[in-house]
Each structure stands twice: as structure tokens, then as C-alpha cells.
Image (cartoon, rainbow, N blue to C red; front, side, top):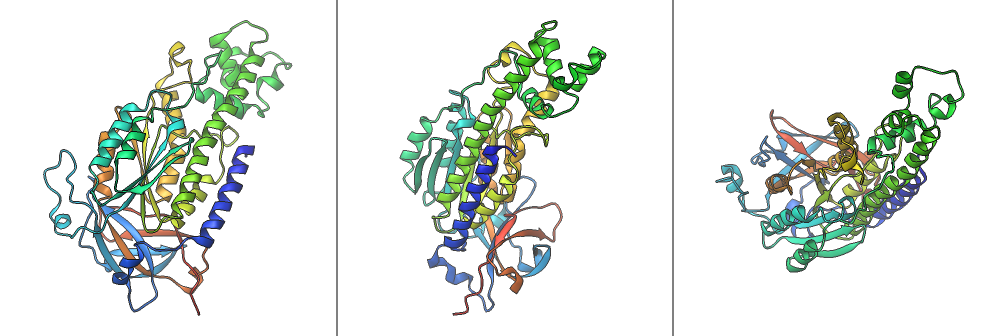
Length: 428
């Protein structure tokens, strides 16, 4: 594990400990919790049940749900369907009858989180316009907040949207392109860091018996770059290797800035009451797909998912493909489709893990500003179920436990946070 990942884990762990001690587990503001009381001691579990098009499914009773905590089934005492909007998404004529018949609940708390450091300077304008259109289609009673990182701009949730709109207009991207003398792609940088300790790397093979050039190129990414950039130059491989490690540090710094921003966001959310819907907009968070490559982040995704559970936050991620196959030098060297696909996967893996753990999903946008993805979020987040679940005594220790929810109907998708923290029973 790199030094930055270890520091991030310690820091995030501290936030988790603070959250466990200070946050109150509730799904609705205090004034509304009375309607959720039952004759047994239950915890609130919020769940989204949607069809293939993202429309919420209404009229499911508690018998339709199966809930397990750490692999053990728990009784579902009640299931309340809460609808949040009357809006019809663009391109759809009507809402499903079952949804339209359900009363609209009180306003939501919606927090927009923009990883401005993941967008290259000047590249975020189209996406910010789509995000402003998303805000305009929320209910007037919804409270909207904004967090832009790594700069740390924070607008607390409010029904006044003007300040949010002004700030989004100023959010255009701030990531600086990384310049490479040898036109190294992200994949090559990751592979060079992974090969730095490989016994077959040029560092240990350069003094051994000569081998077939094609075999050497397959065995070591440094040789592959040399064959493209500087064939025949005696000291070229050492310079490629040194540049790869230098650029890896810059990639790690970018990844660290994104993780730190999410940590700061969740720390703020733990101080806000009630359920929060978070819309994270990012051009990707790079994580190595090789265990010995960099950047690597250990268990940060799981830990952040646990903090999101304590913060009572559901996270959807709009992943905008920046169309940047390399860093700065991409225009000088074409990147193949397989390499581009691999880099896209590395940019997406953490976002997938974190969003799923936090009860939402990652929606990929390959072209444009993301209007269709924002439409999907509006549909999915227009309603959810509040389940009353009866925990067992062994669940009541305030520790993060794995949560799974299923429904007894085929063809439906269930979204829920993958972690639950059950407070100890109050015996006073």
C-alpha cells in the first residue's frame, strides 16, 4: 500500500469512529418519525425497487422483502412507500399508475458533489449545464446543497437554488494535464510501477544473456515503450522507467485529492439530519488494476461505504468519460481500443464499489454532458421504501454489518446501502 493510501485509511477511519459516536440513526426528520413507530423495536432500512427502465415499483408489502444482516435473515415488520416528486422525466408521457397514485412526501435533501479535480481545465462546462437542468427539475421543496472538491466549496442544502447555479457556472474543471516526454499512457504508467519489482524487468535483465527482442517487449512495458519512442538509444529505458515512476506520483496525488474530497463530503453529511441523496459527478478516480501497481487504495471504498451508511446517504455517481486516452501527450500517440477500455475500467472501479456500497449506482456517460444519466437518477430517486426491520440482539453493537435486501419478484432491481449500523439498545 502506498503512503497516501495508508494515510487516507487512517484519516477515514477516524471520521468513521467520530460518526459512530455522534450521528443519529434515522431516516426521516424527528417530526415525521411518529408514523413509523411499531409495537416492536425496529430499525429503518431504506430501499429502492425499480424496473428495467428505472421506474420505482409501488404496492409491495413487507412480505415481499427479504432482509439479512451479516448473512442472517431478519424479520421485516413494515414497508412504507415514500414518493418524492410529481415530475415526469423528459421523454416520458406519464408516470406508472402505481406511482402516480401515491402521495408526495416531504422535500428531500439532495447534495451535489462535483469532483472538479477529475475534469481537465475547461472540460466540465457541458456536464455542469446538464447538472443545472437536473436541479431545475427537482421539487421546489427539495433542499439542494453543493460541494465542489478539492477546493472545498460548500453550499449547505437550501431551497434557494440561485447560489448553486452561480457556483456550477464557475465549475469548469481544474485538473492539469500530465506531460510525458515518452508519450506514456495511464496503462503504461501503471504497468511500469507494477514491473518495478518484477524480476523480469529491464532493471534485473539488462545484464543477463541476450534474449529475443519480441520476447523482451512482451515481458517488460519499458521495452515496449522504447521500441516505439526511442529504439536503439542506450539509456532510453532508464529514462522511461524514471519518468513512469515520477508520473505515477502525480496520478496518486490526483486520486488522493478525490478520496480526500469524498471523505470531507461524508464528514459534512454526518452532521445533517435525515436521509440524503448524493449525486456525485466525476470524470473518474484512477485505481490500478494490478495488485502491485499504483495508484492503489486498499479498503478505502469499503470504509467510505460504511461512513455513507452512518451518514444516511445514498450515492449516485455520474461518470463522465473525459475522452482523454493519455495525459497531455495523447494527441501525439493513438491509444488502442483495448487500452482505452482498460483505462476506463481503472477510472470506474472505485466509483462502482463506492456507489454500490452507498445504495446507488454508477452511471457511465460516454458522449455529451450526461442528460440521459441525470434522467435515470430522477426516475430512480423519485420514490423509495422505508422498511421497519427487527434486528437480533447480536446486531446491536453499533458496528458496521453487511446488509442485503431482496424482493420476491423477478425482473426488478433493488438498491440499498450495503452496510448497516444498529445502535445498542437503550436500557435506561
